[in-house]
Length: 126
Image 1: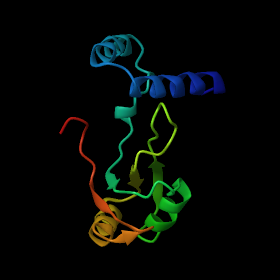
Image 2: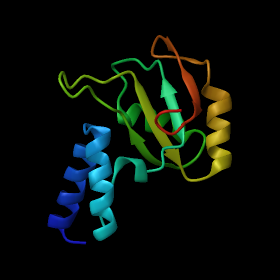
Image 3: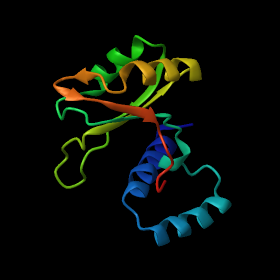
């Protein structure tokens, strides 16, 4: 994949975060014609971390979760108007057993002055 295609996919991912449901339906139809489109919903984030400190960074989360296995991806959503972190994150790890261990050990733990809520991520709307 060339860098132009990669950039276009990134823009589509970011735009899909802020679209109404009717716009998403239109994009899904377009996707049937162009299966290379990528949406945020295509990216599996299997662990939800809530009640995060606003000072937490991607590197902080990678360090904590690396104690339980290989971290594939960390996403820290930010507010689109302020750019400030929203207080939650998603983490994807290499193996389900690693995710389960991280969830059982970190749920309810205090970190950066906050009691974490850590559980399996649920699809949006559930």
